[in-house]
Image (tube, rainbow, N blue to C red; front, side, top):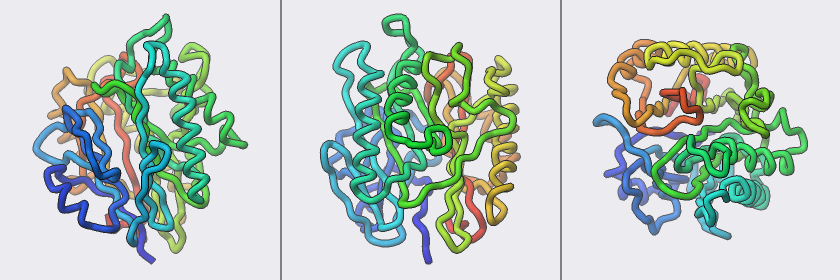
Length: 328
């Protein structure tokens, strides 16, 4: 049985991709973002770096059912569901309630379509490190997300999706999500305190996500959806230089992969990585070091972005697969 795939490509070729009836989503990284008539296209206001990939393509194993309802774009192939939606901020301090409402809408839509288990979420919003009304916007987002997930998930700390929260240039909140009919297994990093158990110094509500989700699709087909990973040990940020943070981040990725392999049916290998780097930094030194660690053939997508903590300079997320699924 075949499995849906995800890979990086050139956004300039997206029109050709739209002719493929298996297309679940085409996530473009561009500035300024264009208004797209096709709901399968989700444009994120981030600048792709270098001459490589500028888009992420999700391709189903069979023809996709595509629709938009209640402001949510969704496409599924009978096995996996991709959703995305955005909401405008109606007031300067509206991010918390807006997040709670959008999350509950997305989870309700996934359930209604027969995919009640959200595996992975990508969150994008502007001014992530700025304060509004005395509260950092990332912490306001976390409070809204916690409110929604505490209501949506019966076993809150064992069913949290993998996630990333990234600062963009576009106003409003943009959320993409991947959902399945059956749950995955939550994976935590032994080098880190679980984000949902952070002390209150990081906000009145915890960052509610798992470090990764290991999903078996049957017949030895496994995916590991890796959350945004940074230079954090325990719950504290480490290092104030790009090189030091990169080494710590790579150590965290290595530990997370090892922890996942303890529960996987087969060995896992990275299939692709997405690297977010602060806008003012030169990512060139990172590319060679990452390629040396994970192999020259591992696809990399570099994006200029703000990170959820002011002191963090980069964040890496990705996908690992087992051999039976390594056709990406």
